[in-house]
Length: 552
Image (cartoon, rainbow, N blue to C red; front, side, top):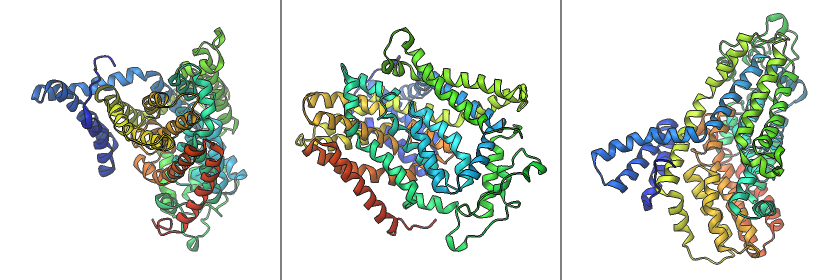
């Protein structure tokens, strides 16, 4: 990076991420924890280069905004996309599209199980980019899951577990081309061949659908779910006209139109009155000052989102030179974020064409919605910039990844056990640095150096690298996709991390067994079959254990 030199700081290089993680877990405050981590990294950098002193301390302080500015400049298109997507969400809500969709769901989806499964399916469908996935699925499905009293923690977990895992195994995605680039010549073909060995991604998707279908929650997630639902013995029907949930579904409606709404099925949606009131207040505050149209229809939500998906893909192809002869897969991965910006801009224009002539909103209301939507993304953008800055400090100044990977790579083990070791190493680096892509970039060169391409364990090791990196990213509080999943679900970020950790770790432990088996057999299907069985057994045992039966 401009103005920074990579140096070797040894064991000191892991202090900033560990300090940031520890402070975040202790203080429950992410912004200051990340900022302190970045500053600590700069102090270590300056003291290592120039010795300890007051001047070096001042220089360390001034380098923090410099690093943040570098990250903002390098990720400007992504930040623009986040802001514009937030604008699109509020504009759709202002037009009444989100409310109309929620009313439609209330009449067609009868229970929380179906709402969760539908959320996971939508996460699978939006496979082009993980950032796009996190925010879009959250924006569309949050009103639905709120109506069925699915906790925001559960929603955030579903979003997070169908974002990176589907992107890392989808051949047509920004991830695929990036990984192919790391692998060198013929890298894209190698990536496709390694998909069956990416046990974490594949088993995580299976795990999500199994948990949504069976509702066998355990640990902190079970506590979170209990907080939004009464115990079965205390269930009772809340009069629909007196409940706060009803007020959530009728925001922007006058009394006469509220009377025309279909009755809301409360058989699977029961909670304390104050919980409902709090949820209603959150919904109202989210669009405070924004008039919500009474004439919105479901297609006012669906059409802009479909346009967003289609033109995001077309935008990626355009930005990547597909229409000038570049092949499809390369074009998609050339500049995916710019393509997303094109898609969201087109979607905003289409929304204006749909909403303004039908008087769903005025021009001033449309622009106010855009302003409010951009404002709603400021918190997520702040955390992202700080997380990127901490990751940049570790990667470009202190050599955190090189130290960890070099240290662990020196452990003398047989090649048959190395895929399992690589999975653990990638998971640790991904957790410490909060980035899947950075972890993959660090580990894959080592894998290529250890295993020749014709070695049966070559693809196993690549799958272990990709899977371990995604797991580490999933359980890291400084991961950008973890942050965006929290933002999309409007879930407290640290609660999302705490509730997701046991679920992701169950899959990771099963994957570790799978890589041990694959190290000896070289066959992915045996490992996947054994993995599915082990996951089911683990869930049933944990659900019935004291850990699974924990009370809120």
